[in-house]
Length: 101
Image (spheres, rainbow, N blue to C red):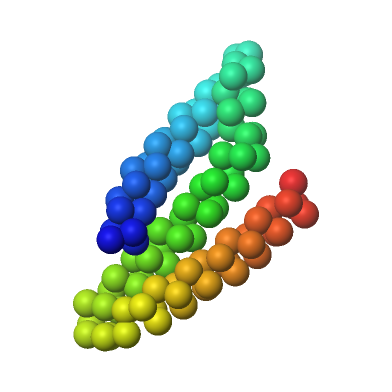
């Protein structure tokens, strides 16, 4: 139940976060004076890290759902394996993001 609910909430959240990123990007490509709110929101590290974490867990949980649809029966083992994999990938992406920013 947790993964089903998290998958739905993270999908909506990712849609909003990507929408914010695209919208602020449009404002930054204008030739006129760039709005301060768009610049500060577009370069917000908290939103970037949240996007990385949500994207990683959302995609790993999606792969988990596909594996279960193919008939894999050890759901509890797959739950922990997907959580560990998503956590490791998220930590690696946050580390890469932090050393490049």
